[in-house]
Image (cartoon, rainbow, N blue to C red; front, side):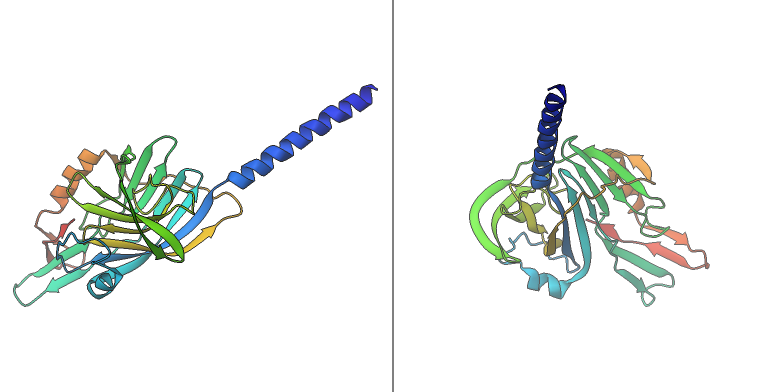
Amino acid sequence: MGFNVFFMKNRIYLVFVTITMCSFIGNAQVYTVTYKRYVNTSHNNSEEPIKELDEGFFLKNSIASFLTLSYNNGTSLFRASTEAEVVIDEVNSNEYKMSTNRIAESNYYKNQKKQELIVYHPNMFPSFYGKDVIVHSSLPKNDWKLSDQSQKIAGYSCKLATKIKDNGQKIVAWYADQIPINDGPAEYWGLPGLILQLQISDRVLHVVTSIKKESKAIDILKPTGGEVMTNEQFKKFKQEMLKPRTITTSDGRVITISGSNN
């Protein structure tokens, strides 16, 4: 009798554990999403929405790279490559002049549970930031304006959402509520579905190229290895680094840095 009671209790426990694990696996949201990013080099500064300023515009006026969003149940890492257009002017000056056209973004770590945003800005080259920088802040607020406007992207029915950042930039996002994760490129998140296409003013366009739901968890690691700053400290630091200045490279060339950032 005692053995039977023990057996039944353990059987019930095993059934409970099995149901719990199956429920966890069924509800787990783990994705790997790839985007193609276009960075506009024409500087038209138009504020047109994507329906008028579309991918064709960016194809003609941009440099492009591929980026990956790794997402695991509310924690994600958006890995971006450093893009730069370097112009050497040897005609109008006796010195080499170099200007940079770069979006100051790299690896974005988001933790929704802790409302944490960590951005890793790699040093583009020794004459730019001079060091790697990690900026700690809170996730931006979910102040999206939702719309009933829709379009198909990568086979998914997407809805429109917009927001205006503190710096005046207009953000246009298309999200798929069929994919139940509220994340997207860079620091953008908080919509009722995955962001498949994202436009930042007329400067940057992210377009999804692949979406894969993973069968097991992905390790999402916080960026490390740079000087830690707050947003305000990084803004001041970047302003100083973007001022025109002349440096001498390791091979003896004199270069005037005259570029600016967005």
